[in-house]
Amino acid sequence: MRLRPVAGIPGHGARGVLDAAVRWVAVSELADPTPYLEGGELLLTTGMRMEGDQSQYVARLVARGVAGLGFGVGVSHEEVPPALVTAAEEAGLPLFEVPRETPFIEIGKGVSELLAAEQYDEISRAFAAQGRLTRAALRPEGMHAVIDRLAKEVGGWAALLDEAGEVRHATRGANTDAVVSELSRLRPAPRLPEPRLLEPGRPEPDAVEEGGAGHGNGRGGVRSGEHGGSGVRGGGGALPASLALSGPGEHIVVQPLGGGARPRGFFAVGAGQPFSPVTHTVINAAGSLLTLALEQGRTQLEAARRARSAVLELLLSGAREQAGAVLGPLGGRLPEEPLAVLAAGADALEALEPLAFAALLASSGASSGERPLAVALVPDTVAEKVALEADAPVGVSLPCGYAPEGLNGALDQARRALAAAGNGGAPGKGRGRVVTFGELAGQGLLGLLDRAAAQAFAAALLAPLTAYGSRADLVESLRAYLDSNGHWDAAAQRLGVHRHTLRYRMKRVTELLGRDLDDPGVRAELWLALEATRR
Picture 1 (cartoon, helix red, strand yellow):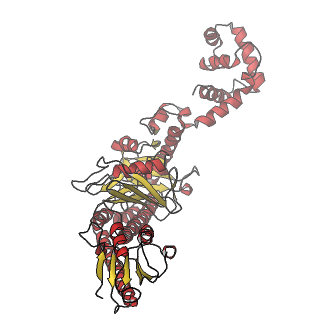
Picture 2 (tube, helix red, strand yellow):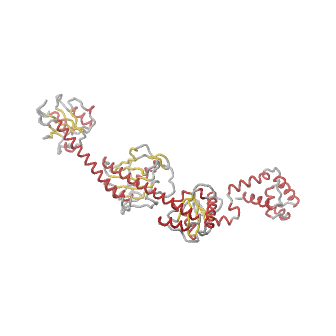
């Protein structure tokens, strides 16, 4: 098109006509066309109204962000006005001469074709990058391979974080400190203690690319940018649908993972330059692949858990051979006898699964009718060690075998021990309180009773005595009488009163309670009530 640059050319201290980014071509003969421009346009004019000083005209174009100015000669002016050349040179506005034989429409078509070619090239590069990410997702490393590939595609780093914001995998140079800090700021609630699922089928330990950074490289100074979207629910409130951080020489994007309302993980991407639209497309594609892998892994895990629950039901019904046939394809095996049964809340299942055969037992399968239990079968020799790893209340049975009577009995023992572990009715081990049924049995019959229920029973049974207004302590007199096995002299001596005084008090006890103290059953109930008040 034989366009000749006359101002703003390289080497003259300006940015140069060839370096200016052009978004579109506009034609205007107005003295001030800026109200009709958006910025980034190549403005074409024949200068029909140009006379005298053009510094204000050029200043308005530069302020609007015009990419360049093309002046058509041979219509109103035979050459580009010197005043315009001077103003453009001083303002750094790219200016070039359009010869009379070159129609403006030809320039418009040329720019349009170049823009279309550029967009096609961007789309092609985005598709190629998506293909490479997809192939990475098919590798054995799964989500980690996607993160590694993504870092190469953006020319920076990438990191994978779990639901709690803990780094699970990061490439070399990852500034994960800034990401973790920002996620913690946006979600101030305490992190949940249970393991987080980030690889299909199993929680995994922290991992970092060889030579890379785990929890960050210590760089700081990154500030929060705009949060995109309406937000997703996190552990302590709403988190943004996307997060942008920027700082000196670094730009970071953080996106949540998971198909539900609550994110099940995050991934972050950082680079030294702002992300282009193509790069954002690549980042979004990586997010889709990571979410798909996460959800597929979750589906497979839930299917395996349902199968293990079926195996547990078969074992409890006495069908051990059928249970082994179902468990075999899952790659699991049952412990040898003697074994112990562990019972815990459903939330402890993820912690128990890597350590033992563990499954959820629905309430319909348990006599208590309570919420589902996490049940684990482990060798008796390591039962307490495994239970301590759950970091939650756990009940442990006595040793048993696979005979249905023994296994069901052990399950009931584990459930009772769990109830004691949860309500503090028995001494336990560890932060999560592990109670064995043997410890309950060592406490006698009271150890097998629910603490709250036993205390409520005691309060109701002994209420007439505790409400008695006499100075005599009828409750302690009854306790001494029962502890002395009904011997008047021994009980009176323990209380420091005359035996006739004690006989009078027991008569009042009989009258107030309406019960016969000579009845062994009555004595047993009263003794249990008195012992429950001590717990």
